[in-house]
Picture 1 (cartoon, one colour):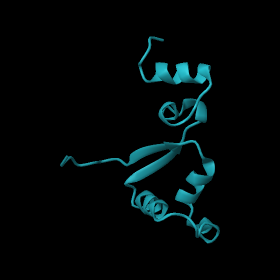
Picture 2 (cartoon, rainbow, N blue to C red):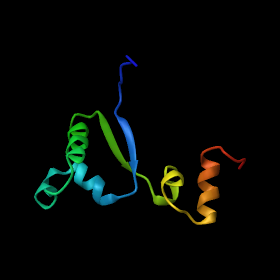
Picture 3 (tube, rainbow, N blue to C red):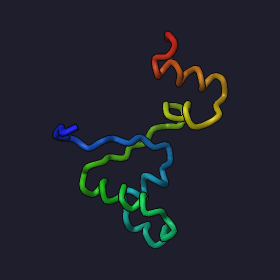
Picture 4 (spheres, helix red, strand yellow):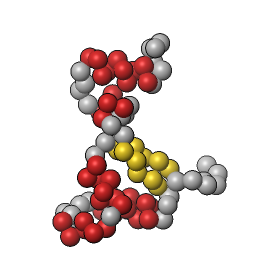
Length: 86
């Protein structure tokens, strides 16, 4: 898109262990089986291209597309997407 990016792209994650692994390479010895994609994300975090932030499961809007949800949570996320009126 040929646009300069001044701030890191924020990725919201509801898994605290994943966030810790991205931010702290000390865990590397216990995560040798981790996929190459994960190491690329860690590299992007170090280079400040990407920022990983915690987002509680109840606020993780992407879950509506990837998981079966309870009816209440489904409608809450649907409202958050602006698909129904609040």
